Image 1 (cartoon, rainbow, N blue to C red):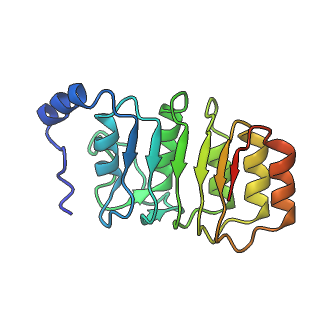
Image 2 (tube, one colour):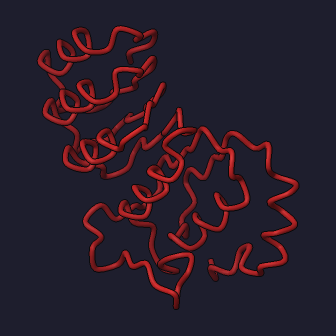
Length: 178
C-alpha cells in the first residue's frame, strides 16, 4: 500500500538473480497495484511470459497519470496505467505469451493497441467479464494476433456473431474459445 515494495536497488539486484527463471507472474486482485510496484516486480523477473492482472484497477485513459521521468524511474506510485502496461508489453513482446485482463475496463481501442505491438505473439488472452469489449475489438485482435490458441470472452455482453466469425476466420491455431 505504501508503494515501497522492492524499492531498494540492492533488493532488486538480489531478487533478479533468484527470480531469473520465473515465467509467470500473477498480480490479480491487488487493490493498491501501481505502475511503480508493477514495474519493480517485473524488473526482477526478466523472463516472464505470462502476466495475470485480473480484477485490477487499471486506468485505460491514463495520459494524465502516465509519465516516464528520471524523478520516477519506475513510474507512477499511485495508479496502474494501461500506458505503462503497453510499455511493458513492448519490452517483453518477444517473450510474452499469456495475458489475463479479466474484469478490467479494457476497451476496444486499448485491445487494438495491445494487439498491434510489433513482435507480440500472444498464445492466450483472457478477457472474461471485460464489458467494454465489443465486436470491433475482437475483430482487430483476431487480425493482429493470429498466434492465439486460447481466448476467453465469457461475460463479454457486446460480443456477437461478427466477433466469433472473425475468430474462426483469422485464428487458425485456436484450441480453446470460451
